Length: 479
Image (cartoon, rainbow, N blue to C red):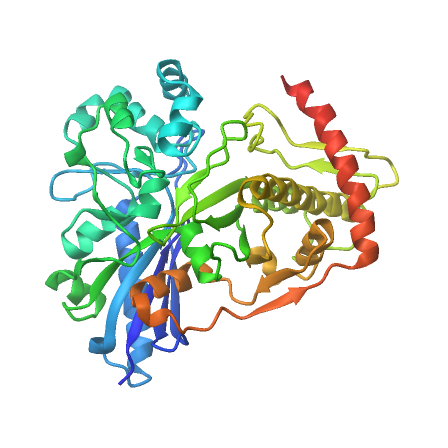
């Protein structure tokens, strides 16, 4: 009899599920998209029920595919979730959503952001939450609901994110994993506990927040009605998971003292695991809790896939593959929605420097890719000032499907880059959390290694130095 674990990834635009056996082999997978709505400028909403329905769809499909291999629902021992971070859901006491989920991408709370900063400066927010306050954070959206939708706010019993909302639906328990809590408004990652000063500032009481448990801990068995919906047995356990970046890092084999992870999605995120809850008041590098009870994650998010998608949309071409161009005299600063660590300036814009009549579409594309690559190197240098040198870096996500991206990164960093063969690192990380100690012998996700080319490293070192000079000259212009 096989023992099977389900790893579920509730992402921004779709849900995915992997069924993994006790050896770490993937037996089945499924995916279900859902809609991200933009009813007003700066708004980004989703129906919380869509998360649950998508979860039901993908789990039932994996169960069906496992049945076809002779694996019964009773052989599925546990499931765990990777979830999008810091999306806000408010519910009544029974866990019924009272409004649309406000996505982490939503920036409606600009006025509330300014008001909260007037009450407590960035040093307070970084000290209490491990992050700077931004208009995208759920703290600002909680204040927005309290002030702009006061009638609704008066009915709110629970302030949730995606994992505890779904845990209540599946198990009847409002509980969340500590990594997800640490990427939300009210949690102090250094203490792995809710921040009382932030709760008081936002007018939240402890009873409105979920219980927190470490990743891999049992949240509980499925409710009978949830088990029926999913096609599973009621004794299937829901284990605490992690937010998407932490789960992807776990799935890609990141560990303290080991390689870091470059997650290449809409935003690119560098993630390094550490056994110390570092903080740096100068760079304000974001800190979260990782999936081990004595581990933390250092994160550097920056504009990546969004900038490249913008280029492909504006400079349309039939091919989906990167073209071959030259960027040695063309520089692109990919700050299409501001610049992050260590400057943290939302007013800075994307900039293309050095354009001449001799440049073509392929040259601009190469400059966009090299600009994103330069940001990778710049952010990695900042992380390594705290963590020390990382012995390796593994790429996961959409850019791994290209042969061009990994070579640019390897040459810019001057070191080998491991490239994940699978794009489902977050779901695989969730499956590892579902399996707990039984995943200790699982193999690493398959990957290839891209070596830096000596001539490319030489050229990219010159290019990066010029990029940094361009950056230093341009940023003051946006003051």
